Image 1: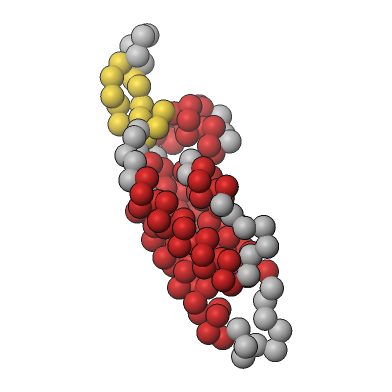
Image 2: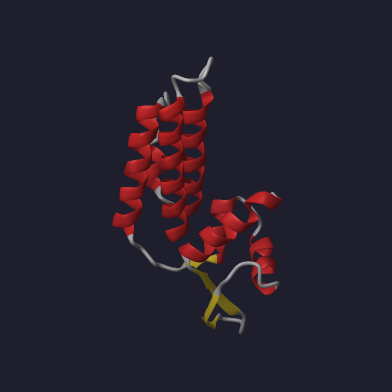
Length: 143
């Protein structure tokens, strides 16, 4: 969640910069605040922050984007959850096959913890939400 909080803070600074130079531009970029909100909503959806996803405004101006980002930061701080995710949950959030997640774990790309042996002696992998966010932030440029 730390990476998501840092992302929200960065987006808030960007919105403040947009607000500062909004009147100086001959034609202000109308799509910029909406794009910031979409990026934040997508990351929140991958992390399973349902409250943040549902609060996303449809018509996002600078003020609406600023309010949404502040609410996303507050929701992230309040959640403070560190429950471990299963491989199936991560695969569902990322909309990829479970085997792909296991491959990323085996190659060391995605940090995971082996909590116990399963019924057939297979490892039971669990992923911290912070590790998933770090993986997504590092992988964003390679998608």
